Length: 341
Image (cartoon, rainbow, N blue to C red; front, side, top):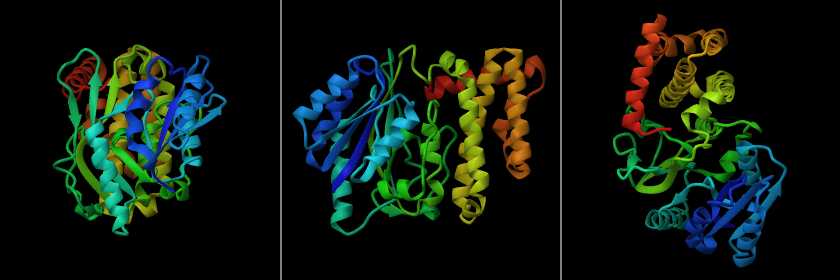
């Protein structure tokens, strides 16, 4: 059995996937790299096959019909033989020194007969054209260099939350909790992180800048105009996360810190949905914003109250054009501070 499975979802990725895969190969025989070719129309499949032939003990290739990012991640999980599972998108890459330390730490855990459900490290926003890189770390929220549980977690700062880039899950946990991401849907990385959380018991945080998250392509899913154009998919993911929270509520509320973290995550996602709907300036999108908040209210009144009357929910629902302008100005400030999209 491999130590770590890394799924690399690829769709028309020929222009940049080599940088990603080359950064993963130094993991050696302890790592399997699962290149999932999601129905690409360029020569992604040829490049993937080239790596499989050169590194048959490391690289596995799965060719499938196009189903979107979530479908490719599902395929990665289905084909994973490693004890742990990581997703690295084909336009991103990893830092060599941090990679070595993570693998060494995972080896030590296994050698001592221990394991963890979720392994966390830092990621870096590699924003095109910016020399100063924003690092997302968890110094103040998580204990370092030891196994810990939810009761040991401290307060997460605003804008400081765990993304797909930060996390390595125990493979069997993902399989046993039945995680399946929706097909032909963007922004499902939030579901990938969110849904397993009630099943997570043990964690480990290593303070290394491992994942390099590239932002800069005009067609990238996190580009603001692209997100506005795909706002219905953002709303779909938002609702799916809410539905899951409500369905798993009894399991979630049994652990106060899980409940608090998942509610805060919902708060962030709902804020993103709301501000993009406002930012578009389209009357039909303002109606969609009202509908989203009504959906939350009808689904769970307590969750609605928590989100609606919190700081972010209040800011998203300021009345009139002036209120919407204030909301957008606040969003612009946050974007400059946290360097997203």
